[in-house]
Image 1 (spheres, helix red, strand yellow):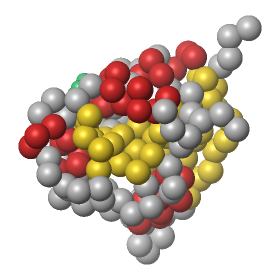
Image 2: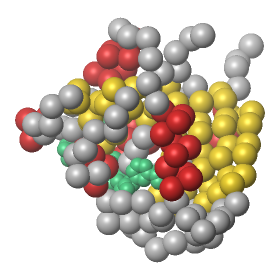
Image 3: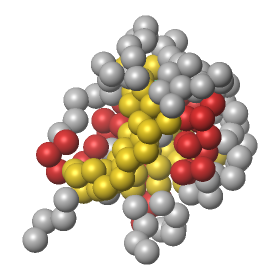
Length: 169
Ligand SMILES: NC(=O)c1ccc[n+]([C@@H]2O[C@H](COP(=O)([O-])OP(=O)(O)OC[C@H]3O[C@@H](n4cnc5c(N)ncnc54)[C@H](OP(=O)(O)O)[C@@H]3O)[C@@H](O)[C@H]2O)c1
């Protein structure tokens, strides 16, 4: 199978993705979906999102951090790159899928390159400060969808939809 560049994110019904550098919701089932989907693959995230995770590594996944000031990050076990082009060069030289995991500025920077999108839509509207950037959906079509009900641990229902880029003839 050919390796892919895949955007993965969770948003509410208004496109909100973040609040105070964290997720606006607490949905362990959604986090589990993220973990299973990205396990053993590579991730690229922005420095602000990495800070929001207290610069902790996600086990089992190769992590790239994008920053214009790479010297400010001294976490071991991550690859720090200073431009999207450097990330794309890195991608070409290895075999893993690359999951673009946010935040907003990183989703925007890689928008021309997505082979697939994995989008969680959380039912409801939350308070927050960061939205998914404007996006041209016309090049993508849905290929799979799964809905998860709210339960005792997960306050809101959510639906995960996978899209693939429509191939040009
Ligand atoms: N719901 C979701 O699925 C999801 C996923 C991820 C994140 N989020 C949320 O998104 C929010 C953060 O998003 P954000 O846009 O503020 O920050 P971000 O994208 O996480 O990080 C921004 C930083 O990335 C670096 N960067 C961005 N573009 C770059 C480029 N072209 N070249 C080199 N470095 C570049 C810069 O780091 P330096 O300042 O170090 O130069 C910039 O300050 C948080 O609230 C987070 O919780 C939500």
